[in-house]
Amino acid sequence: MAESYLHSADQPYLVIEPGRGWVSLKLGELWVYRELLYFLTWRDIKVRYKQTALGAAWAIIQPLFTMLVFSVFFGRLAKIPSDGIPYPIFSFAALVPWTFFANGLSQSSNSLVGSSNLLTKVYFPRLVIPISTVISGFVDFALSFAMLLLMMIYYGKTPTLNIIWLPFFLLLALVTALGVGLWLSALNVEFRDVRYVVPFITQFWMLATPIAYPSTMLSEPWRTLYGLNPMVGVIEGFRWALLGSGNKPGLMVAVSTVASILVLISGAYYFKRMERNFADIV
Image 1 (cartoon, rainbow, N blue to C red):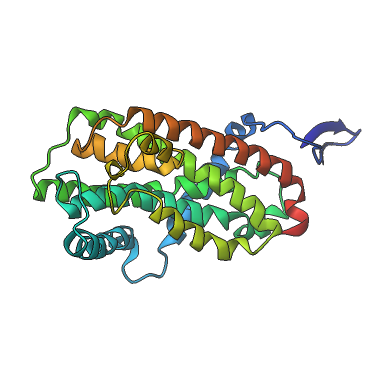
Image 2: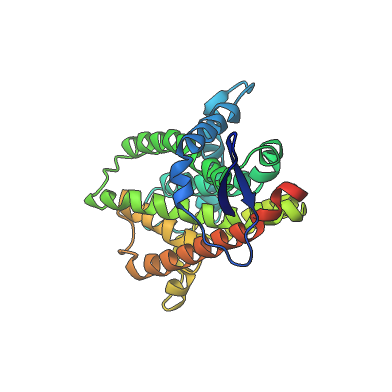
């Protein structure tokens, strides 16, 4: 968006003009509007479990019950290997970052349409809306992560020194959720079919990610290529950092990191290219 300040004899006013072509991301505007980012993030946290009977407990119930189902069908009946780790904690350690990613993906994809009143009334960097939606998921992550720590105590699992890498894998999940969320939120403004596609994408992506099974079931070089799915590096990295399972997923994580950054950069530029039409068609 090109901006220019024009000063009349009485008072200054701001003229906002649509950008053309592949405009720059203008990330500096995000810092200028950091208070709005904080406000929208806090708003998303407050309204997420408003008027629910169990409140924030849903942040734990969802991955916990999924873990129970996986433990019965994949762990006990199908005898899926779990790298020598009790299957309940093996699957729950993967479900914690996966739930953070899946919630960020689904909620950010509908964030622009859900904020249509705000979009059509005032100017601000539109990137603030999907970013705040994804960031607000950290509260749910913290609650489910606390549950994971309790399970580790129950099963007698002590975190290794690899835990210092945990923030990196969480950041990788954030980057992946935001990158895909930027793509889908911009597409959802023009094509409302996206809201029906997102649940299908989430289910397919979950099956394509080593949550219920270890990636060690694949041999090289397919295991490294498996890292093209950015969430593969996140899940395997989480297990390695917390539980010390498997070998150091170095090359796989490197592939996942590159794939995640490419998704974020391409999503951000597509979002900026399309944002000049958001207020007209949302």
